[in-house]
Image (cartoon, rainbow, N blue to C red):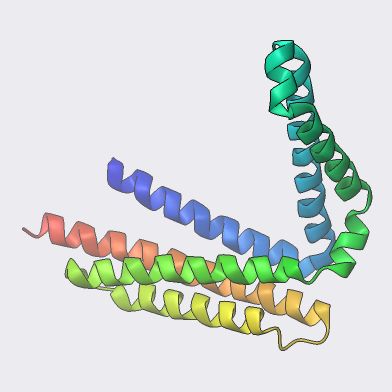
Length: 186
């Protein structure tokens, strides 16, 4: 049962990766605007919670906590992000840098999985290695930002997400199949 949970989690992540890639391919700026707006709403919620916490705390404790200041700053930032999400999407290429960093970290995690598979003498580690190398290459390309047109970068990112999601899914299925063969064959 534990094996199915583990594989199910990996396949769910692969499906999410593919879904994000497809949505990003269809409407990159719209999807990014939704993500930016969600971050703004999160800041608003955190700000409101901090401000409410200030007023519900003991007055002496609240005076030392600066919770009201933090809450109002987070709330103001959240409102700005929500109402200026179009400007943020158009103006900030760092969003793609964040994706590049995430792709690099994902590639490093996949590299760990590959090395683990080799050390555990599991077959089909090659698929995991391909996924790892692909993620790292995508990260390097995105982080070096050779694209002058933002839309080209979004399309590249979307296609990369779809391909890495598919390769990761195949890798998860093959590694589970290999593990089942090893455990039932003994």
